[in-house]
Image 1 (tube, rainbow, N blue to C red):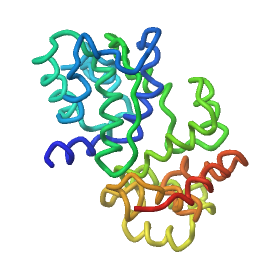
Image 2: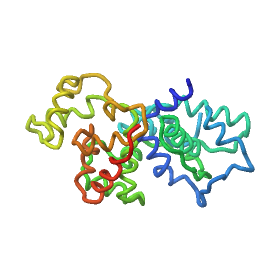
Image 3: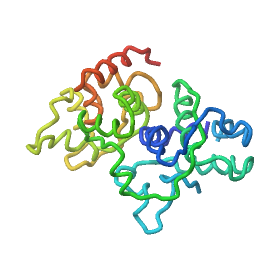
Image 4: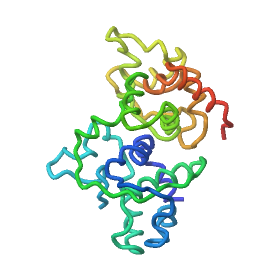
Length: 269
């Protein structure tokens, strides 16, 4: 149970994006399921149960210059989980399994441990040894992106509109801060206004928690269902109760809207 609690503490959407797409630049060719079947048969089992070199895990040569120091990654958590998994795997298969693959496997297991479906993970990535905060800020989509910016960001990485909706669904798990939605609540267009795309009742509820300037408590990304991987996030978005600007943006394209509607009809656990 302790492992489960710590695994799902990973800031989920960041981890999934990094595991699925952002690490492609250090992946190497020919990813496949069962890559470690012969070289480290216990790799996936260990990852499921329990000082890496994947670029997001590296510390900077100079303070403040690593990917983990980027503004878009300051809320990323779960480094200790990855370190524990790496230590366990190293005892069994020294120098075989990359931390990039461990991240991908951890993303899968975090979904499963919170009630979602599992999937086969293609492995065989190679770790990046260079970590620059600039690259993270330039490549990770912002929570304030509109639909045009989101589509452009995902297309650049070879991902489709469907991928955009599916990966945004990782907001079914995790938390954010009032600071992230401050402008949406109090200064959306620079005129001390509230985002009109936000359900008025929901906006009022959020304003009771979040003070102007960003002060307030930690907020669930998926209000009322932030520890379960389910369809509740999509239902909330469809009702204009998505917390982030990037969540609400999914309703502003015919194809992404259609996929949100499709996902929102899935059973909620």
